[in-house]
Image (cartoon, rainbow, N blue to C red; front, side):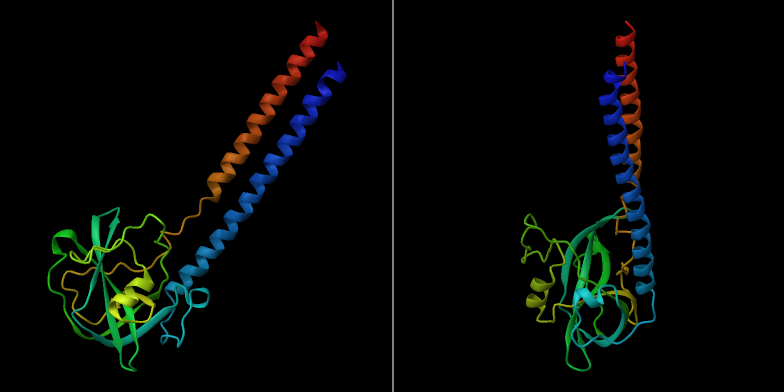
Length: 226
């Protein structure tokens, strides 16, 4: 009888150990991601600083920044959506700063029916966060220039179109009247932490593996007794 159950027993022990190890690894990843999100949240709400001379994604993603300058009539409408509202358009304009630099500013969103309404222009002081959005893939359509509809915040294309640096400041606060524009600031709600789902999956598979191994061992035992 012992010879019959050695293989299923080893299979059960090794398989369960592997699945449990994967579960604990994902648990560690879950805690690590929570720490990362906490750090990002602190960066987002930190006291704003001046715009760096040469901001980069690796060093300045989510950096809290205050910038002053002039916002003209130029604007790009980026199609997006929110759970609460549905289809919206982000309003992206160039900000000509007092030192001559020009950057992209995501001023917030308007509803579909307000897309082509006039927007306020003039001097503005904005507080927000630098962001390099991950919104582009091989399936992203080209913008419809005639209708002024863009389908992603492609910083390189937006900067070329509006003659700015490929730097985007997403507004939290603005000194200008909103005039129908609702700020859509950067937050951590869009950054997923799915590791706990994987924890449940691996631990669940470990439990199933134990049960199936136990059933196999029981059957082998019954055969030996028969």
